[in-house]
Length: 278
Image (cartoon, rainbow, N blue to C red; front, side):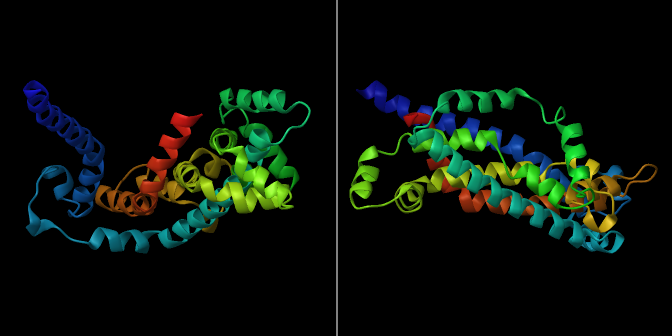
């Protein structure tokens, strides 16, 4: 008994130590980017890891918005991300409920077929998607990113795995009271899925926010560019203002950090429920 009592604090201290090491490794690049952004151009390479507060300045953050229409890039990214997330949540929730709770011919085969498409890289579907968007006249239009991004097979799988854990008794009672399929979905089943929806929202926000390939191919004009394209422009071919670039990196990461802090409680709960009860 005494051995267990002694081991528990040691195990807890070891766990905290490992978590602290991993947290440092995850946050170190962002901290270095912030440190570089606060320095003048001359001090970036002269003293890359220096912590001298005397040289710190917020000028790089101001220069980002003066050198490029960075606020436009951010608004474009917010718009594309918001509509893509709304589309993914709507399609994934409806499809996940259908595959989990409704019975129709070919349901299991269709679901397996959808899962098989997850093995196809996005780069393979880039050319067909481009041709399709061109036929619709949506090149250099944000809809060319929103429409393909509004469907996620992984999201359907995630929602289905959660919906199969919802007890059927709730729906049976609602069915006796005369609720139709859609009313049972929106009023009975969907409120249980807050954690899973938060997980899906965060994953989709990160995927759309950090996407570079599709915006590079589909968007041409400067006023339609996203943050990732704006960062590529700041990178430059001959001369790169690294303090300004790192300031843009810090600014572009703030919404992701805020989204995680807001949804982390629901995300952890959703992952635990989906992973343990499937």
